[in-house]
Image 1 (cartoon, rainbow, N blue to C red):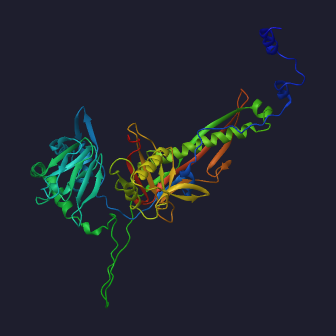
Image 2 (cartoon, helix red, strand yellow; image 1 turned 180 degrees about the vertical axis):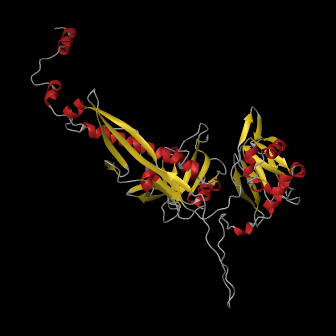
Length: 470
């Protein structure tokens, strides 16, 4: 036999002497996994928030009366390269708070001048005369000053909608106590004291408003803007003690429970015949609930009515000093509240924190949280949440929060004891069988979140998370 013939004989299929595996599998019981779902995340926010029972579907946050001092951000309109301030937005200035004459506000907006600046440009210099109000339409501006021993110190980083130089409109002797340098290219809208004075002469109603504003009892506020409580301390003898009371907000914020729902459909044939070894209806329901919980966490972060990103007080929003999240930025976020329970950041942001800390020769600690090791800074856990958005410019936000009613923090809201409740705050109601023999179940969960006092929640905005080139 030739070599080729021998090789062909070896390649011919040999007759089987035992049962093949393909046929044997027809009689075997396979080992199956439960249905898997890639969307499921750790959902740390849902786990860490204390949940408050909300009967009646509404939660009212009663606060001590706080004077509104016009510290909000200012919005602009853009027409090509031209940027204009919205006249009504000038009411965010403390001295124009409550002034509602549109024609006068429009005249003030028309006197504002646009100034486009470049990165590195010095916009104002410490010690120079302050003659203009500066409104930031776009860009980042770094404020620096001189410390006690002559060294340069950082004062603040300002971003879109911020402003500086409010005192320059009325105080002829005002000077800049800091230097403002552009970190990026951007646009300012400025109003000079001379133009504002001309409008005061031309509009008696504006002058009357400014005179009334200047006589307001500013001393009747504490450093948080709350109505003061008159007290006396350190006295001797029998002086007359001041009478006082604690005033409350007349129109407190109310949070209504939001809802996430889905109708789960299962054919009766599937529910009747294919329930071993796993209950098909239970598995369908489990995955539906997982999706609802993911949506719930997304809404708690992003909903415009009650989401944490949109409900952080403007004074609790800060900007990073250089873009990436540095240790100094994390400290600046941490120091703005007592008893911070945890940071919340996108996983990619946490990776950027690790890179930036390593560049500074620092390494975040690890703390035990429910038997799991998580990174931490200053002993405060840094928890992942992929619901925090990342912009197309590769920037994101880091949240820091104090939680719990007793701590005047952030709380989650839900209602338990629902009809046909399946889990706390989640119900599964049987809706019947239709003409196609399909079972329907209504799966519902109610939820919201409330920030009890403004400093319970802070946000480090516009954090650059892209890797810098080596």
